[in-house]
Length: 144
Image (cartoon, rainbow, N blue to C red; front, top):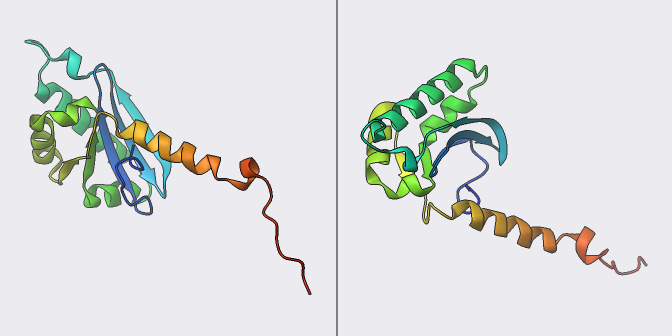
């Protein structure tokens, strides 16, 4: 998702992906998943009993737990960089607004948040197709 959004993968990133039935919170460090969690709430759960606030409070509780359990500075560093918001929930401005207030850091929706993960997967596939293991060995000029 972060690759599909064109984000700098060399610094820690905290991503919240609010989907239809599932919300995922994950920490990326140098492009690799360092921590990941899922919450069984999403945009299709919003009704009179489940609200935007319920989802944002669950995300805030999960991020707080991640901070407590992290024996490095990765989660804190990622928070200082701001939170990336993806999934269909990022199309609803109330999520970014409420999460910014709860987490006290900028929460920014990624461009095209509902298909950013697909764009990232396409970039990875494109890169894999150009890898020498697929294209064959590169011929080097003979040594003199």
